[in-house]
Length: 70
Image 1: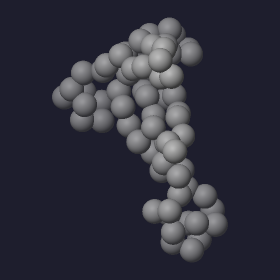
Image 2: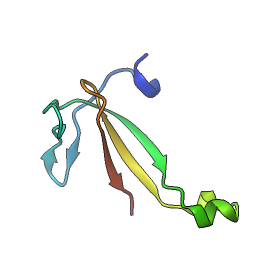
Image 3: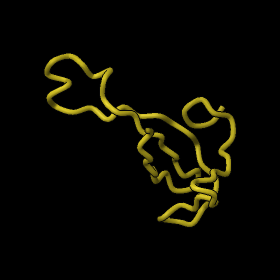
């Protein structure tokens, strides 16, 4: 089992183009989602209402590419 429970890293396409790591140029990534918490929403215990990001983690160097989900 690989990073984050995903067996093998995969190639990813963003806006019709293959994603390449900005740091090392690798083209395989593990997928993960992350909650974008804010201080105000956390203070009022509304973390569930914050935006979510789609993250692609480079399988070679670990750099995280963040994409805001609509």
